[in-house]
Image (cartoon, rainbow, N blue to C red; front, side):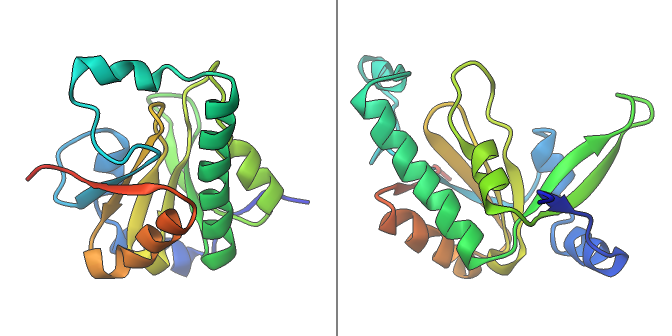
Length: 170
């Protein structure tokens, strides 16, 4: 089964209108979107004495963290349409951003799995929740939103999976 499909032109245009700053978020440039963290941790690890908590690459704790995140990704796939952002073409001169809709749950979840040998690559648009969800290496994913109210179901799904919502400082 195909993992992706390219959405029709109208859907792509609608996504670009809904998320006009997605390229700025993708390229870590300044933008005006709000954000919150979805994490296995119940607070930000600000103190150096806590940084060892991020060094979890195997064992029962890693299995539990992976289970929580995978159940969250699975709940998202079951709840709403998910669009991936990919670059196509030769970098940097002829590359262009392409939006693709996930069709296959197994293929989607395979791309969401934690792998210490590679950086997380999930950068997805969730139009129903007005959010961009970005996977991170430190067991804390970041959700960027246009409307916090519309993003609330994303937070509820995370909490149902045993994850925590962390607010960024103003």
